[in-house]
Image 1: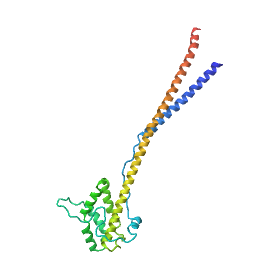
Image 2: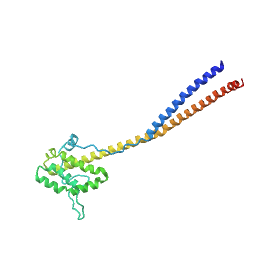
Image 3: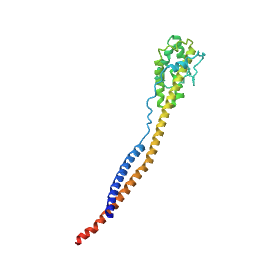
Image 4: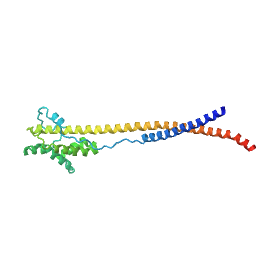
Length: 252
């Protein structure tokens, strides 16, 4: 009777160990796949396209909240007014010819204003100003220049600036708009950089979690190995139990 109960417990234990070992192996494989997916995760560092900056109510409210004081020259981080060209300068970049032409749309209500603008701002001074102040932007430098040209082209038919009759005051407003655009552009670059940094940090966190999860794989494999070891022991025990009856039958 006791032997039958013992055999029954051994059979139940075998099936239990098979079940536990199978779960441990499957769990280890799942943990391994999950860990590798975290370890292999890489951050999205693509710069993509910066948001387009347009002339909107925010610009309008900042530029025209109250009358502007007349100025005698452009009030910018560095003067955009004409400078004496050097004798060995390279040909001016056509993009700055296009940029000045776009800016000139805010002064095309009279030939006198056009002449004054062209005498104050030349493609050369625009090129020098942007190269000296924003050349560090690298690939974004080209985007800045083309974006500014599009910006002033888009507002060419808007009369907000042309309502200001004084040339110097209007020029001051145009430069204010240009400065606001550049500030928004730099803010967009910073937001993009923050996003990239966030992606890098998130990816690094996932990688560390992946390496930490590898311990779960080891635990699962260890449990599986222990289950297999006990099954082998039970198998040996069962085979040993069969030896005496077999010997007895041979003797008979």
